[in-house]
Amino acid sequence: MVRCQCLYFSTFRELFIFPQETAEIGKQLYETGVRSLIVVIITGTISGFVGAVQAFYQLKPISAQGMMGGFVAVLVLKELAPMLTAFVMAARVGTGFAAELGTMKVTEQIDALRAMATSPIKYLVVPRLVACAVMVPILIIFADVAGILGGLFISLSFGINSGVFYQQFQKYFYVGDIIGGVIKGVVFGSIIAMVGCYRGLYTTGGAEGVGRATAISAVHSFVLIIVADFFLNYLINAILDVS
Image 1 (cartoon, helix red, strand yellow):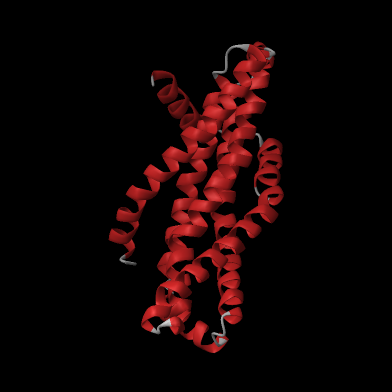
Image 2: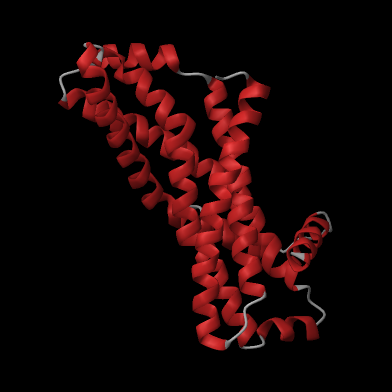
């Protein structure tokens, strides 16, 4: 716990000390955002499929299938897109951070950075934190769009008119839902980056330790994302009044 707090405060301090490692930040923005775009769009589309199928079979007994657009809007924008995007990023990016930094730790590359008077926090952690905090919210927006289009596709396959779908979607859509997703993205991205970097920087036990750190990074990120989502739902609804 003490090491975690030290890493957090050291990263926060280094975040505001300029100049920053702009080349490394640019590289991490590309690796974190651009290279994750396809899998996030696929995940978002499938979340729309799932939301629409669930909506149809829940609303069919009361002959309210026309409300599928509203159901999809609430389910995808508020929960499915942010959560599934965060899980995908934790599995793809967070574990990558843990493996990469863990390998550097056990091969003494991080000690070499310190020997060259280079801060490992500023050079390794800050760029990854910035990249995740910036790119995860953007990816959530892409997942939102993909999820809505996926929900529309399934609705059309069930015989729901696109005009009806859009009318209901518009009725239940709030800009605050998008803002809430962006806020969640910043928090989730920060969790993913810090957990992955923490597990990597404090890896021990050689190659076996790297594998263990990678697995633990994924598990801890998932749990913290779920806990953060619980509290953020209360906070966002209270501030933005989007409930």
